[in-house]
Image (cartoon, one colour):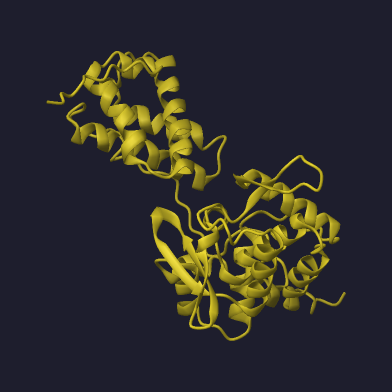
Length: 320
């Protein structure tokens, strides 16, 4: 009969956690390993928790159970001096969720962060740089589609523009996630929280994806990643390694510079560009939210930049 083998915790842990005993150490590790599935969230929470625990230890803390609301409040005040309000709120959320986990695991009696309020912050319009439809078209047309790299980059940018895909969802696609249904090409995306999302392709996106898959001979590898890194061999064929998000960002900056676009673009810019273009052409906010896989139209509104164009038109009326 198989027997469970006790797990020895050997990972380097913050001294405050290590001093709280084996159960606290195990619960702390489980928070990051089992509770948080998104790797980006895990890194962000890890940095916030690490910074807080280091600060608390520096100011006399000996063990995690000694943390009081006053300590959390003081740390949040300090964070506001060096971080923007949204970042401070996110860091407080990380601390609060950790202590919730420790409370339910009976490591701590109460959550010392539950009564601490973060800075007030209201956002009605996002800050992500966007392109006009003309700029987006110029960027896509400027990409050399006679090379594998060009076909890949045009397909990736086109996917984010025409399907409102997050870059993480786009880079996480497999070849089989581009498929034919009802005589139309569709894409299958896995968005935040692992939520599946499928939608038909815009005719331009269908052209880009078909040209890329055929040109790179990817159809024979349906389980492989759709967007891949380039090899170092002659001709720079694609590898089977998924394209990292940082590499996608650098590619976008290079392509934008080559197209003469001065806007400081990011991976998220094309999502905002596509949503704004859709709404300008008579699309509804409700349908945009559905296409973007947003749980609320309030989130979709952050990507709507039509007001910025209205403001610019009004500013130009100041004729001096």
